[in-house]
Length: 557
Ligand code: ATP
Ligand code: MG
Image 1 (cartoon, rainbow, N blue to C red):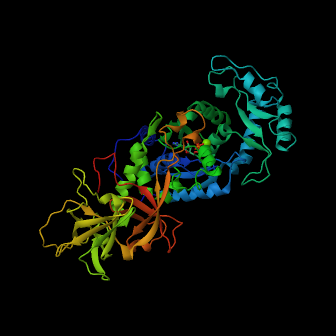
Image 2: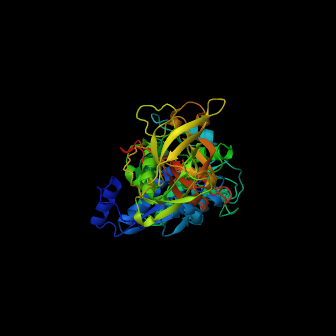
Image 3: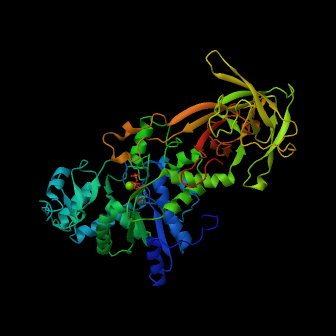
């Protein structure tokens, strides 16, 4: 359950309207939804929208949500995926009522199949898949009956039993519903209900060598579980007629299917099949690589569950498919981390600065807020000394217009410490600036400043003697094109070769003591999360997102 306070009531989306009407008319006292992942990969941001929708509905209306693994395809499924899916849903902040598996219904589904055969509504077809496809017709032309369509009930029962007993090889026969080969809806042209597949299943082992097709498993599972509103993505809209037909003929609990548009994010792919390829071919370090749009990747990158829920809430539910700008997701995480993340200083591209009028060998403690947005987060100590690091980009030999950072003769404040003035700088033989020489202004310390001097720039810094070297992983979009799926050729050709940049930075000592999952705002640099690769000797941080946002008006914070 989401524990945070609900957002102010917004107008209902179209699924909520349907549910509200169903409750008001007394059709249901409570509703039952389910999230039905196939355990053949890790969950991604698209799944998160479906999770937030299904669980969100039963948070809002009386009822509950089940987690049902749609595990009818033995070849691609694995318990590793089952475990990761459960962990990810819980991390997102939701708890299911029942943990269910379509494979637990294999016996019931087999009984259902026998009922269809006995009613003369299903037959065993010996056609190959090519023959079936040829006889299927086209959207404008009716199909033709299979030569096996009129087998007797007895013959069908015997053959189906033999299929079950493993007497036939893979693909040699199928069980098909007997509906109408001239039906306007191609999916109603005698759809396949069962296929032969001699494969080990992650739960039922070698018990079965026939497996129900999606259409013969999904709706029946919904019905067995008394799901009231079975919500799926739009590509299943043409399946609804078959969904209803099967339930109707079986005279079982009438679940209803509703469709909403798939959610896709730009500059990435949201398909488990493609994500698996990236993992298996080593384009990323794993399903939880921080560049992946998987829940586990985003978590490792530093996205919070609240920010993902907020994102799903903001994009809402639609009937038409569209591409969502990853900028919105970044906006959501910035908003959340701005409230929660502790402020720290780290210099990612260091330039040494010597404060020539500060005594050597002396450490002076400065103090700064842990989070100006949250007074209760308190203050922290930061050591200051004669030599500090600043960012290279914070010094310009010849300052550009409106450059309020450091330049010869100019003053800036070092955050939480003193106002300094630049007196000189040192260049090496290549003309690179290697050191900036400054003097600090007496009585200008933050919080005790009596100088009355106003400076326009405030820089983050780290005392050189106290600096902790840290590994910083800077991420960019995983793909260099916005809509990967519409590009020609192999999607992997569009992987952004610069999506990961690893650097060593210098951090203030408070950052030495960090554990995976911690989130920080590195002042002026962005939000960063401690990576599981982090050790006491070498902390490792992932950049979750930069500070700049192009969604809301604000710029640097
Ligand atoms: P993929 O193509 O990534 O394998 P899928 O739809 O096959 O996705 P499932 O495990 O079958 O994956 O999906 C579980 C639920 O999540 C389904 O109800 C599905 O409709 C929903 N879902 C999957 N991808 C998206 C998406 N991009 N947007 C919204 N819902 C999605
Ligand atoms: Mg699927």
